[in-house]
Image (cartoon, rainbow, N blue to C red; front, side, top):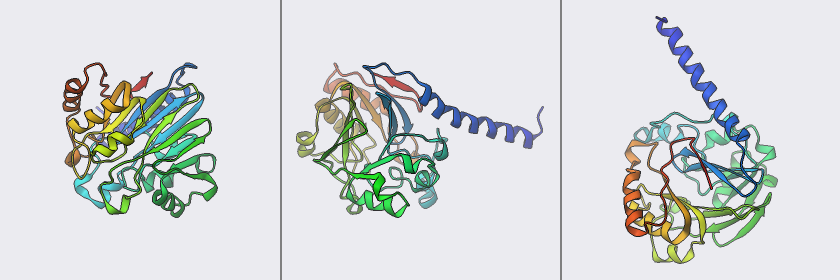
Length: 272
């Protein structure tokens, strides 16, 4: 039997190696010319890969929120350490700690080679965190920009706090026409349904608390958006902010049984 201290060090070392391997697996993962792939990072975070471009959106790779609000402490381990992250485009939907994470930004080693995309107030926060103005591309709701071959369109949301009045969802379309919608944090409204654009895959928040979509509302939104799959998020990392993704799956089946629901484990690849 290992002495307790040695066993603990061994377990910690194995976990650190796993974090390193997770990013390497994404970098080495083969995506066909007509395909795209994404990996769920937990909370509302994803990494996407298509046409040789890697995109992160809202990666929450620390316990920043838990340090400020202990009730929101991280319940699951970080899948990739900030200093292991390596992407071409880094998208932020709004300035909340679990979306624009200062610790992830601080530890990110590729700041000077990455284009950061965000709405207006989040852009100001990125500047305050040391991101060069030359590396920031502001895309607000209703605007479209093409970054490194990826067409990115800001989508209207119903913000859940005055300080994030600039919150934007985003639709990404890669050069091979693979597309994905990220709802960001948003409440429900008829205008939201009118404003969203179609995309093959819908990534929607379902936690139903603090101004976010309930599973039933998320199903209505995903039905309006998605053509190939609906994927829930914002339900797993914080116990106080949790929801059962099976509830979303049930509501989605009631709303439109022809749209499959994918409930992803952290770091599980989804290819379409």
